[in-house]
Image (cartoon, rainbow, N blue to C red):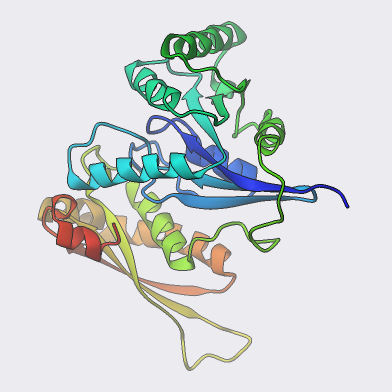
Length: 305
């Protein structure tokens, strides 16, 4: 009987280092929210890479950052607890940005983890010229050496151009223990549909908004029910969603002039949700103010943090 490997890997890195895009590319489907806004990911989303000889379970963590709120502290705690539970770790360092103080801080944190393979992944290589990439790879190697971290491998990839993504999967799988598949074949993620829908809506709401908003935005799917009076061959699912912000002024930004922005968020999200569920959807969006929810333990619990 041929051997089969299975296990967990997670990507870490500063916010907007390309972790979610890479997760989606490896899984071959959109399961992680991608946005140029920092702190976009708030859940450790699992994505599954299924092969005949292996199952790789990817955990996409929030970016580790200096926390300014209770939410920030909880997100950082989530990252650290994830590191301790996975078999292998990949640190994403975007090739179009220098290896900065935030990266070096993270590398020092990773250097304290013993007996666990840690890969350096140079992401977004499609955005730089070869000489710039060479300098970036040397800087990654030096930063590891300075922190006392021996990289398992340093691998350049582009999730967007599908460059070396399969090779990365091979390398990650090579570090996993022998074992049977832990999730059913054909499944892309173990996240509930409501979580994925909330993430899709939050991503649409973040498009083109000012910097202050991303941290203040939370989305909760209140209800998902099939419309009762529909014929079997023409189903419709009613999805009722609350979008929470912290202040009235932010509510105005999300709704937009005469509701134009909220309608745009609704139509952008609905097409993706219908693809996810495989059925037409009536999306009912409401914007509500939950004052300073990021700093309020009671409200954080209510919003799922």
